[in-house]
Length: 388
Ligand code: TGC
Image (cartoon, rainbow, N blue to C red; front, side):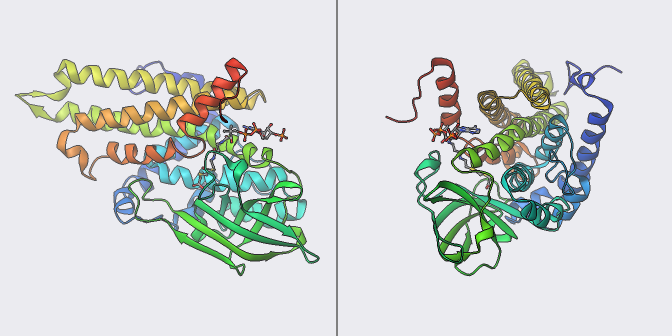
């Protein structure tokens, strides 16, 4: 049998047996565990916490990290997993990104040996949840303007300030908090239950409903001297973690796009109008073909980024290219798929509008379209246009 209609170019032939195996395992999990339940979780605005240990068992938490109980898989394997999970829902892939690419990566890259031993094995197993607190109410695209501060005292540190849009904060066992110090921006590990930390989920939301994002306030929070991540000072610390998450998003978005396309293709084949299936109309075929073009190109792009990453050659501006392009195209595909579904496309029975709503958040977090455009603009012209 030739390649499937979702993989016209036979991109699967570019994957190794191990990569295909990882992909199939995560795809099976998504089909059996996420897809049958996602409409309910989304409608109820519920993050299914019970799946966290299952994701640990599946080997997708801190998937690309080595040692400390982490799975130690390749960048391509991690990307394929992100793609399959986001074919289920962006909120589920977001959990995996926040836990693995952001919180665990920060500890793995910049933590002390004790911090790594304390947190990483149980986070990889899905026994503990982490979050990553960078964005603030008035510092989104520009984290260099953050106001949250950590003041050194005789006993350690005192943290004051506020963060916003922090994924998983209300259920996190540990927060990675970035704060301004006399020594520049530093990372701190704040365990749940620390006095002075106040977390409030942001709701109701029209996007990412099966995920949690929170406001967090730090009011004179006392931390020990060993709360600081010793390995990094400056924005390089959080940005190096964002690179990992943005890379995963370039893959994940193509999962949401593929699921939207497949839903529209199946519907078009069975839905009769004017005595013929929708798929027999030229206007429908053009929509389906345009979706497939972008899915194939975007998947090939993500795979190329993954191969560069595994070779240790992936540059931040290349990640920006992937994140910008693939999320933008995925959003257009999800919206176009919804048009084929007609009125039925606005019900929870079909995935494309849910994907489109989620992708509005995905295009905004981890660097907006505008930020990635300007990162690329700076790279090609040599002139930074972020500041006036
Ligand atoms: P700039 O002066 O260029 O750089 C400051 C320092 O950082 C280094 N750096 C990087 N290092 C590693 N990877 C990268 N991609 C890096 N980009 C910059 C740089 O070398 C420098 O290091 P050093 O040692 O020389 O000091 O910084 P800038 O402020 O001018 O950057 C501008 C801009 C717009 C590119 C940057 O601010 C940016 O990327 N803004 C977007 C911020 C963003 O993505 N926020 C997302 C927040 S996290 C999130 O959304 C979580 S969502 C998940 C959830 O919790 O639900």
